[in-house]
Every structure is written in C-alpha cells, then in structure tokens.
Image 1 (cartoon, one colour):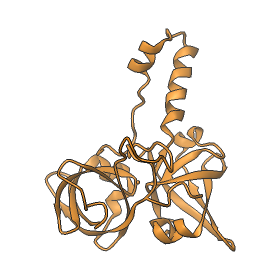
Image 2 (tube, rainbow, N blue to C red; image 1 turned 60 degrees about the horizontal axis):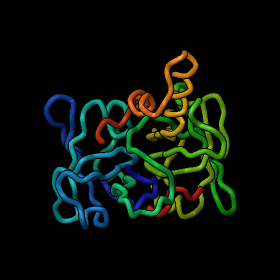
Image 3 (cartoon, helix red, strand yellow; image 1 turned 90 degrees about the horizontal axis):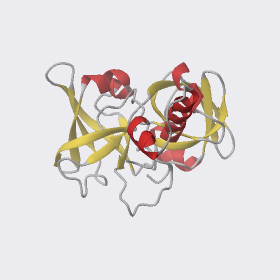
Image 4 (cartoon, rainbow, N blue to C red; image 1 turned 45 degrees about the vertical axis):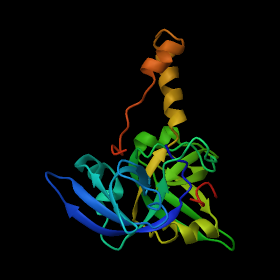
Length: 230
C-alpha cells in the first residue's frame, strides 16, 4: 500500500528483456534504496514492483509481460525519469490517499495550460474508468496522488503546483505521453456493494469481506512529498 506522495525522482538505468515477454528493470534511487531489501515493494510510476536486488543506490525488479502491456512501464527506456515511493508503514502520514500500486489503465496527456502559480493538465481517461472519477475526488497519475479539478465523459483535469511540476515526472510530460492511472479503490468497492444489493444479494459483513474485492485491470506486480499537492 502507498499514499501517492512521491519520495524521489529516480532514473531508469537499464531495461533487460528476460524469458518470455517479461523484463528486468534497474532503477537508480538513492533515497528509496537506503533501507530497501530483497522482497520490499517500491512503486515505480505508480506500479508496485518487488525488489530483487539492491546495489549502490540501484534496485532491480522483475516486470511481468502483463504489467508491461497494461501499464506505461513497457515504454520505459534507460535514462527515463520515474516517480518512486516506498510502501507505507503503519506509522506513515497519509499525505495523499490510499494507493495500491495496481494500475487500472493507461491515460494520455491531452493538454497543458500554464498559469501564474500552477498549471492545469488534462488527461484522456479510458471509458471503463470514467465512472470512478469525480470532481474533487482522488486519482493517481504515474504514482502521484492528485485531486480531480474537472471531469468529462472521457477526460479529467488536475491542477499542479510548482512543487509537483518540479519534483515529479508530471512537470515534463508532453501532449500525447502515456501515464499510468489508478482510480480510488473505495469507489470500486462501493460500486460492487451497491451492485450486489441491486440484484438482491444478501448483505452483511461476511458477504462484504468475501465478495467485494474487485479485479484489478492493471499493475499485477505488486507512488513523496508532492503527491496530493494539487
């Protein structure tokens, strides 16, 4: 579990194709690797990856073909900047919102509108995710927890302050660039629970716990301070 508060702007060192359609990704991140060990979770552009090895401020992670296809990680190349966040602890402050690191879909930058103190970005939104996005609600874009400023049938917009623009990848994203999207998981649970009631399914704590877990569309691998800053 993460909070969407990016800790560090890292850099992809190498992407190596492995057996089948998978890859081994090496990422430089001195801060997030300071206490990282084999098996720890680190979100890379909002996708939860498991640390395989750590060496001199660089960690490696296996990325399955499913994740490469259904997230924007498949487009990463050596030298690309990436948003990094270590998994939250029970004592962590929740500066953003609850983020699983399970990407629901890939969006696209539609426009950028600079203003004096901030910048408004509009993103294309996959139609299947539109019902989970509401004005003033939360959404994760490339691992950054953001507040939705506006929403349409196939788009949403956010306002980014200078800190977010400077210290995350969103400051350099251009029109047409792909971004990883994760909607608020609470919206999916509510939909599932209300849907069960609508068809006459029995209610109660036992049913909610057993039946309310929605399928994740994206990040199957299991994003500092600048997440919920807009």
